[in-house]
Length: 231
Image 1: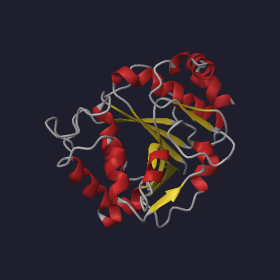
Image 2: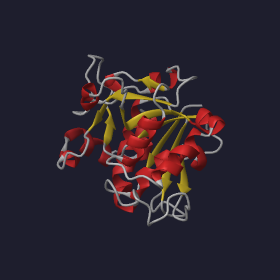
Image 3: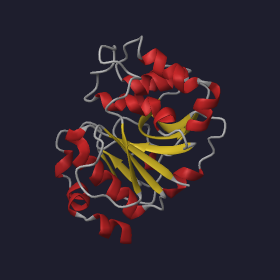
């Protein structure tokens, strides 16, 4: 089964839908998970989408050091996907400011049997010899291994004790060193990552303020779910 997941607070629901429609329209995906803060999504969704209400989550207390860091507390839920999706062993997680422009299906074929996750390396890490540090705006997670080894819960525990600049991303990268796989750049094309010349399959707007006005974004925003499912 090919699983994908997006995490969003209410103010990002529309962006999450837009991103997910671009994925469904271009890729062979079986289930798309929406991790949200409501018991029900405010609009009808196709059967391929499963919603998970985490509004009552107790994993990350509101007075924790990272709860209000980096735009939304929901990003912390990416560090808890092994708990939120207990029956899923592998999942592709994507930020809401991403648009798939090509087929993402090859991601699910990446060999991560011995990795906690795979991602695209970030440029700044080139200045830190020995550190393999990836952007997790698009990441392929081995949830089974995170559960089996206890590494997933270790990441949660560390996030509740230490403050990070980029909470879920920093914690996952620092704690998983030596067990991180490499994803081709084309699956996460954004200014922060090291380019490797692979064809672009996904655009990650990565905090650009004007990204919602891009033609690709407007195209999938106005596309219906029925149309996305037919493509």
